[in-house]
Image (cartoon, rainbow over all chains, first blue to last red; front, side, top):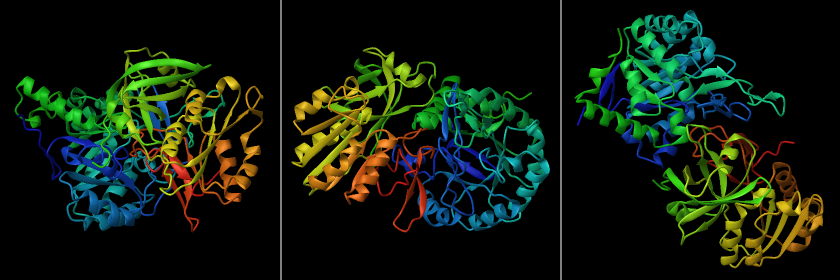
Length: 303
Length: 267
């Protein structure tokens, strides 16, 4: 049996497969389908200080080999997450990262401070990359100075591992990665979705309720692999890779590009068991190739 | 694991047109057939080569425990349903079922009115079977564009439940919308509960009339769906509680059946 356990930024996981924020809620729905403890971990739904209703519908559209969404961070708010969601999900043996989003650095800091006291939480994922909200979100992640300001504020408010989720909607993702590393990030996760849109030609109008949305799924995989490969060479902190992973070999591409762990998103939407299949396929691949430890493959394709 | 749903590659047992652009599809899915409750739905993904990418939600229309199958009705609207129409006996497609919460008739329900519009009759048929076996006195109001698109008639005739038919063009039953007669039906029918599935404008009208006549009404809603099991929060509908607090509930996981009073009916 090959070793699949990984450790990065002080976060231990029994395998490198996580479910990405926004495609696993707070764990309850998936746990009705399979025991979530089989996962390496979960990035829980992006949470804001106050509850958010999110964007108008339609919030989802079909794309070639993918999906475009504009949910807009609908979430029950930090208080509910602290009292209702985390106590439940933290009873389970997997690495739980809470994704947080805010409209200014002080909001991120307030949430980070509140979450710092939660026992058992593995870390924070700082969302500076949501394409579907007006204030904050991607705006923070597109400017190295703003990104660093958010990360510094979070860093000063918590001892938890801080993972910063990056947007691909920038000219040079490595520049942002270096900025958040300098500001105290323990790891980066990438990519969030690509800004996209669909026109409903019958109505002669944008199809989505929020006009634009974020594209995910296999359509973006090669771009995501490229970005992970670039970022892994630009920073010393660990990288978590995501973007259209559907199979064990897809996941291995990200790991060989330098990712210490991966997250599955759109694939879970079309098959809730996809993350488990990806774990099994990685395990089988390692076995067949005679690789004893997944950690030997991290960055194997880097120059 | 309170409702272990398992994705399967379901074999097409039969597929045939029942009206212009509308098909009945029977899939081998023994577990889903066994577990499905009236008003639940299935996510179907016909595509080879990842086209379409997402599943399509379809109300479960019928089940056959002997054949271990479930059936659905679908109308060709876009690329996903067009691909489904091209399926043949023996083909396989990804199926996730049964999903969502179905209709919930009270155990002591005595008189029910079931209202269907167009293809919305599909998830109502299993409900009608249940109401009949529970001994609930039931009546049906069914509307369609035209007689040819009046679906499920053979099954309904076999159930022998009194049915009023309406078509937009008068080619079957009464000409006009069933909602024109609904106030009178509710006034004299002594119905304790209405169940409804159909186009949004029809459900909105039915909900308003039921509210006026103080008759509880359960509606089965539709919205563009991502996952079908609650994780992506795409298929939301505006709801309000007794205090008027607005929330957005997921059609797939919190529904698809809602109490009509809970739904905020946008014009």
